[in-house]
Length: 472
Image (cartoon, rainbow, N blue to C red; front, side, top):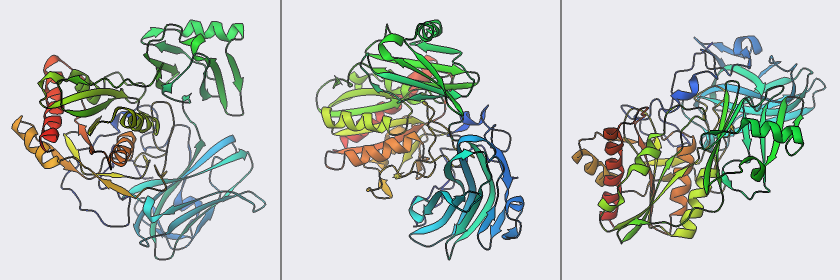
């Protein structure tokens, strides 16, 4: 069985063109917090049924040290089909040679009568270098299924295993962060039989309030084959909410987090006059994080009066696919910044990101990892109509020099991961194409924040903004 390295985010490949290999990865450790509690020592989701390649289709390829190199289609019955409800089969593969475009590998699921239940095709534009997951979803009635994994001609693919587990294996808060009226509904989903152990609004425990709402019929609890759902109106649950409030949920070891806004983010530019600059950071992640997000701390600690020829708007974003990027796009459209610099929590170094990828994926961890509201994405394009990559618009050489002058040692990076940071960067650049400049910088993973640490990263943000404004 192949053990999952804590963070395999080196040289992601979202296009068939080869990319230069960096000598080191400044974003190593990007997803480190997700490896504690949700996955076993080999990286499988804790409730997954695992079928190794040599067990699934022993005659289909050549055994390797920790996998099988396929010589033909792999056909077999994976473990886990006996579960009922919405399931996901996650195929762990490593593609080392492939066509320059079009189909690379197809996964089909069929029932015991040979009828197709589900299919998924991986194209060259969706590839990442190294190990990744290709998921197939289906509704199981507990009867055997056959999985067929078919490489395209000219493809060299190593198959490690197939994981089968419930599609939503955690706590999910729907529909996610955004603007809500009091009558709008929130839905909290969790594994069947679980309950919400704790729910907080802006740090205040409101668990008993939700319990009373369910008991009175103002909130409802229903069960499906695999999930328990609680539905409640925003105004009933978040009675004392602010213009921006944070909701935190726990169910056993599971967690979710989301933002509730009463209205769209105001176009509030601070500091002097001059170029309009939008800077963004993030909430803590994962949802159960016990420390702040360094990017959120850095952005909120910034002294905007120290930036010349600029007025600065600051926003802390939710760590959610689509929703974070959509919030930035909305602000750009309404508030018309000329410069957008987004910051995120990264690895060991300051990483000046050079390129963003049209892909949502956390395949470096088997089964993927959820965003703060509980959604998992694997090999999903951000925008099917957009290009495979977008290059940064920031003057990163000038930013590099400004940070070196502060005593920092920034690194250039061509792999921002394929998580929320990459999602925001890709959409930032797209939204700023005809407006000005946009890009992304990762800050080092940090868990404690004394005043000196806050000042340090505030100065990093300040220097990046000033260097960018001075380049115009």
